[in-house]
Length: 222
Ligand SMILES: *[C@@H]1O[C@H](CO)[C@@H](O)[C@H](O)[C@H]1NC(C)=O
Image (cartoon, rainbow, N blue to C red; front, side):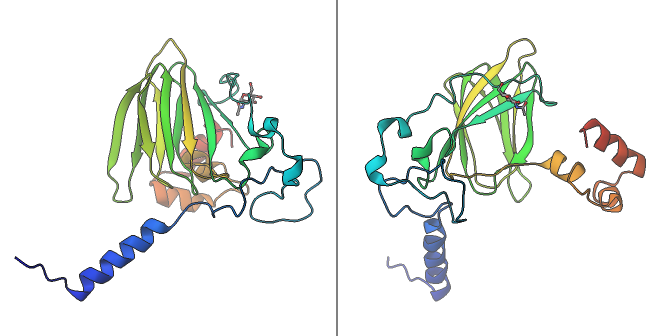
């Protein structure tokens, strides 16, 4: 039996192919572009300027930035994210990715947040995590992951990580496909922005009172 494609099906197919080609970060034009962290930034381009390739050495491509646990006590939610970046790993400049070490205290949480420029795949190395994300149709996808298991948070979608263990810290490592993924914690961005979002907006958006707004702001340290 022959299959006949309607013009709109062909158009849809082409559009989905094009959509699949969109990338979070632009492709680099050279093998590497070791970030020049020495000179004060004079030129604001998409990424950092690079040193001469002749001056690149192996240590530009190595880091021990993720070797040490981040301090989770100072954080109100009990987490600490340590990222590789162009300062502690200059060789990753323009290559379109970073790695994150995520330390989460006992029963600590990385609250619902999003990365506007990156998809994140996280691997649990220690402990038990309840992770999940919400898609744009408001469906939630959650999973418990243990040491050695991974979960992917699609680009831009709100997601969270929760350490289910009430006694031991958890550890995860995430890869993100942008040099500069960006992060917005939903509660913090909404209630503690500077200057603040007018409180009528929050009252109406969350169907809460002025007092509720003040209480939430205060408990989030805003
Ligand atoms: C994360 O841990 C580092 C290293 O212990 C610490 O300097 C930093 O203040 C912590 N960040 C937060 C947000 O608590």
